[in-house]
Structures are given as structure tokens and as C-alpha cells.
Length: 239
Image (cartoon, rainbow, N blue to C red):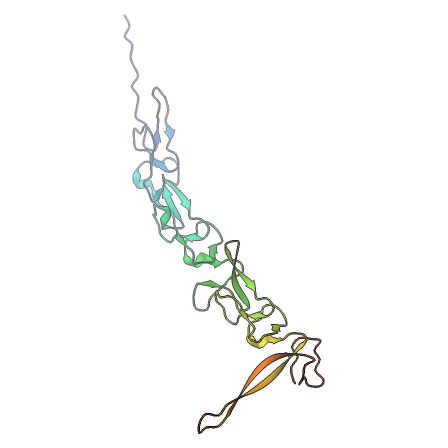
């Protein structure tokens, strides 16, 4: 009788694995994993680390995850647009930090607050990172989204900041164009002219009467209108 000899199977070498019996070869350990000698299945690199190449042999071959990412199952996941992450070896998405209000990033995977830029229409506030509306622009919510809108005629805004535009101070006053940055740009509407009105206050006991002056836009064609006033344009003054 002849004896049957059974072949012995060898362990897969480190850096490879085999999850089926009776095979004559081993598979290379895939990305994101490492495979010690005799591995039946790949082992994911631990949280915060990545397996950046195939054939990793040991846990120590897993590298710290890159900045701008968080790592799970041996793979690096980029932080979303509008977020940044400045550390190596992060294992949770909550480590991605949100850019300041009204700011975002140009790409996913940002690594620093320096990568945050103001969204369209906003500018950087003086001396800081806050994103605000420029002078001549007021903040407004449109469909639930904040935007910087050019101040309409009759309004102005003199400083950078997330405030609304201010109305011109005088009744019947406006601005020659949208986007005014100063109340000095407010002028009387067409059909009115700027006049200085004086009002007297009664004298207090033992004192003298006082007179106060104020500006007002008066309608053309009324009593007291000076000669030569052209009321067919805005901004008419007594000069």
C-alpha cells in the first residue's frame, strides 16, 4: 500500500493575508490595514492613523493622519468646506473646526484658520478675522441667508460692520446714488430745497431768549422760497 502524504500549509507572510482555506497564495494587505504574519483578515489601522500603502506588516507601519482630516478605519477623511483642522492624528469629525460666521474655505481639508476667507460680499473687519459688510453695504437676510446689500437710495452706512443701512436724517431727503457711506451724501429730493429754519425759545426767568437752527427740506413753490432755486433736480440748496 502506498502512503498518502498531506502537504502542510504555510502562514501568510506579514503584509499579506488569506481568508479562504486551501489556497496556494496570499493576498497583499489592502490600503488602510496591516497584516501580521499568518493573518486571516486585514486589521484596520487604529483611529487617527492611516494605512497609506498596501502591504503594511504591523500596527507601527500605520502613520498619523494628516492635518485637515480625521481618520477612521485606516482612511483619512477631509474636513468639509468651511471647516479646518490643524492637528495630526485626529480620529473624530468633531475635531474639524468651523470657520467664523460668513466665512468658508476654498477647498475641503483646510489645515488652518488662515484658510478661512469671507464669502462673497463680505470683507474682513479691521484688526480681526470677522467677516462683515463694507461701508455702503447693509446686512440683510434673504431666504435665510445673510448677505451684504448695497445701501439703497435714501440710506447710508459709514462703517464696516454687520448693521443695516441708516435712513437719511431729514424728511424728504435722499442720496444721489446707492451705496452712500456718509450722511453728508444725503440731499433734498427733487421738488424740495434745503433751508435753515430758526426757532426761538422763550426766555427763562432772569435770562435771555435763545434761537435754535435746524435744517429741513422744504417743498418748492411755497412761501419763502428764494429766487433762482432750480427744483427740477435733487440736492437743491440755498447757495
